Length: 492
Image (cartoon, rainbow, N blue to C red):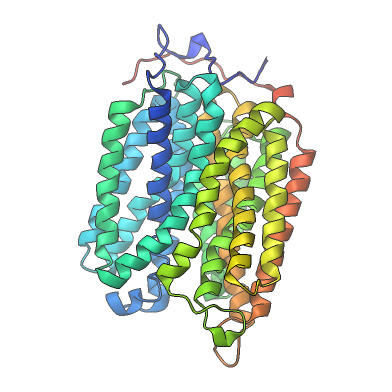
């Protein structure tokens, strides 16, 4: 038994002779890894504003076009834990380069795809982006000086929000003046640039777990995630009580039960459930689901309200480009407050930062629920929620990394990334169901009631996350089971 180590400490028995040298320029490494978050968020959000146009552009139905979101979501959910575990085994930098390579290849394929079939394959390959954030944050823990880990992790976490915010106006400009294929081409170029920067400026971690990859566990976790996310993302289209959706939920339960039984028996599991079941890890992951739900509501709905016609009684009638520009302060505040989050976590601990963040998330969403009558008021509500998201997203990885062995940080962060993704997916499903139920007239746009209900649900999720965080024991006070040391092998 041993206490969770500080970020700069490494167990000598789990890496090759000698220690990996610290990067000569930690600030440069932080900037490179954090910029990967911008690529990830752009890849995830770049097709969302174009979904209404894809049926006409690709000559497909609206339900078929929606698979461009679903395919990326499901592929990302499956690849994240796999890449995280492989990163712990063979090198986080190495697997980060693999993930970036898949994203770049998928983006290039998307730019050249002649139809919906290959475009869906491209979105599946882009799903590898989900593993980039967890690998990058775990790499920071291994190679950065201890006093720079908090700020680095915070900046990388908040880069997701900033990337999502700038992605909307970028998508709007491209959609208005050029072909949608340039979005994929641009992502491919960024992917190549990120690969070159990571290879040149980021040091590989020497920490390894060794062992064999848990193939049955990966199949079980992947199958369960596919069933669950398909049911959540397609429930509104297929019907929540339809045999298909109910069968997917039932399949999720069966696969989870079988996978848990297997993971508890195998010597080197894909997910260490004994560590994941510790209160500091389990409650943080549950809170992460709620944080993802609360954060995504603003991203999904704020731009819709800004673009809704004035005749709805709540809309502002702005174009996609102008709406994106209005929301830029939301993304900018996430970057600014990531450094504040690191300082606060260093002084008071990440749990304090997480409590403040979840409270602000709840407050911002409740302010949204009041349907602000002017653009400045809406910007204020979105900024409050964004500050809360920045604090929460920056503190969550630090909380997780304090509660798990250093040799499992990539896998643990990947699992936490999945938790947040489940929250955003659930938010999308709830919003879709509510906005389809409460409409103006016969088949008109969503009513103000639909948005109020959605934001109240998001605000409640933020406050419930606060309660879970307050119930979470301080990770530093917990002990963590050390995995049996595996023979170390040098990896480039």
